Length: 137
Image 1: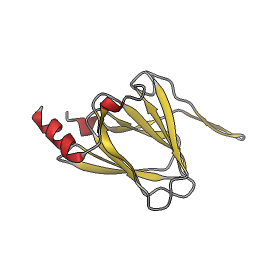
Image 2 (image 1 turned 90 degrees about the vertical axis):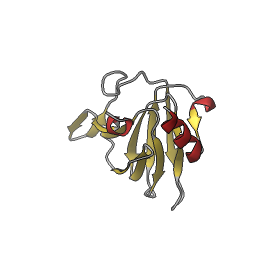
Image 3 (image 1 turned 180 degrees about the vertical axis):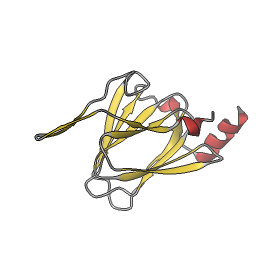
Image 4 (image 1 turned 30 degrees about the horizontal axis):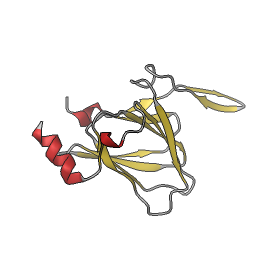
């Protein structure tokens, strides 16, 4: 199985009643890793793009907590565009996957759960560098 095939939508538990919905996330249960960091993107200007990098070791779960956006993932050979618009679904991204986020709605909040603390050395920020490393393995 290639890395892009390991990337998948994970349905998160959703508890609904007359008061609204509640979704919870537990490390190593709904998320296949220990959560070390959580961050979120919001107030993304119309037409802006985020991401544009890959990670050497980091795993992520990307959730549209509010609104919607697209995540484009690729492995240097294949590419997929995934539209996220429900807070009870997240996109799992494994290491060595290039990702770009775009098409943000005006009310979007993108929540990201990460398997590692921030480490700039884990980032591949240039696509050419990513391809060189990806195909040298």
